[in-house]
Image 1 (tube, helix red, strand yellow):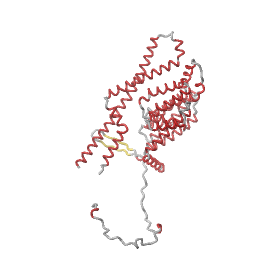
Image 2 (spheres, chains in turn brown, green; image 1 turned 135 degrees about the vertical axis):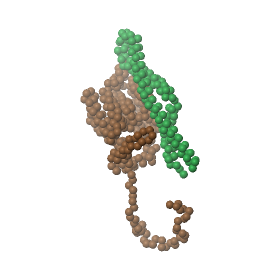
Image 3 (cartoon, each protein chain N blue to C red; image 1 turned 135 degrees about the horizontal axis):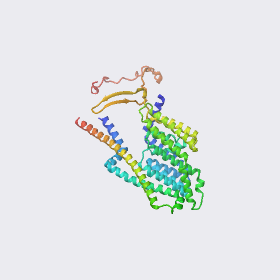
Image 4 (cartoon, rainbow over the protein chains, first blue to last red; image 1 turned 30 degrees about the horizontal axis):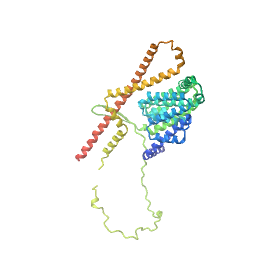
Amino acid sequence: MTSLLQFREKLISFYRQYENLVSIALKFLVVLTAILYINGRIGYQKTLAGVLPTLIITLLCTLLPAGAVAGILAVMIVVHLYSLALEAALVGGILLLLLLLLYFRFTPGDTLLLLLYPLCSIAGTPNVLPVAGGLLYSPASALTVFTGVIINSFITFVKANETAIAAKAGDEDLIARFRFLLDGLLQNKAMLVTIIAFSASCVCVYVIRRLKIRYAWYVASAAGCVLQLIIITAGELIYDAGISVGASFLGVVLAALISAAITFFAFNLDYSAIENTQFEDDDYYYYVRAVPKVLYTEPSRSVKTISTSRNAYGMQDENFYADQDAPEGDYGQDEEDDAGF
Amino acid sequence: MINEQRVSLMTRMEIYRKHKGRRDERISAYFMGDYLAKQVLLSVICASAAFLLIAAVYALYNFEDLMLSVYNFSLSGLAGRIAIAYALFLAAYIAVTVIVYTGRYRRTHRRLEHYYNALDRLSEYYEREEEL
């Protein structure tokens, strides 16, 4: 445990020292991952999916706030979809516009969860996002994660059916393709089950971590992960949604480990040293329970032995000052420097 | 001689001003009723645009059925149903807007109160230093 605390302190100290560089580097990594994810899945616009445009857009997004980055990624998605088919761009554009008008109009402060969705999808653990949202933000993070699930599901559907969507046909099939794309969104049972699982998990984590119980954050993380697994498994059994329960289980286990790490860094308390106290002022009587944080203190070094051997430093002469005249003067303390202690 | 408590207080105040302070000052320039009215007006615009989009998507999705039954249903009945759906959608969205922005306004007010209390403490520090 001490070594973990030591590692945490070193990491925090490293971050404090190089905060600007580390923040920019991490943001660059997150944005680059998101853009590569989009280009890898629906990179139909070859010019936009090239190396140079990707780098330029990533560098630009690194300087912008999270909301603007989400907007730029949304525009990129629509441009790629337009290269595939007009109907795909229409449905994608309407979907993103509805999300903007209905949810992002409230400028939630957790757009970072949306930007992290591609990175977590690649790592096989998007399940960590609702748990992290419930621990670090508010139950409204369920809506942000909901947005991420919808966009990801739509992109996955387009990728899986790109041939059918792009097939050239007469105008009378315009409506048919439009309906096909909408059905892929509205009748996607896997997406529905995932949305319910993630939303319920986020709210559950938030409610439990706010309780005045010991290890609230750890209990909340575990409850959130278990709830996700139960809902996904039940949804798969009831609806036959095509969700891989094994992959979900691994994702949930990873989510539990990552959320334990988040708790260790963000909310590490020593429940064995709780102090209860009471006091009053003019207006209220206070019942206070103080739980100390677990902090790492550098062990104090005490000097026990002083080696007087000069041979260790190549000083062969025992009387080191023998060949020098001692400087003249009084070695007593200067009266002006005497502080009087 | 640097007064560490004063510097610590000023640092915390500046951190607040840098992150949330500017937005809070803009919000606090409004009375709560005016602030909510402004947000409700924006929400009406956003909700109306969203409703139009949803209605357009619904119409496109059921285009064939609508074309087949266009001569069989009354337009006034259809208009009434659309109006009721719009009113319910708008009412729900405005309710959410009022709840969210009332909470935001109150939190802004609390933060600014703490900031102004900190300003009073800061001026006390300066007065004490001048006396010394």
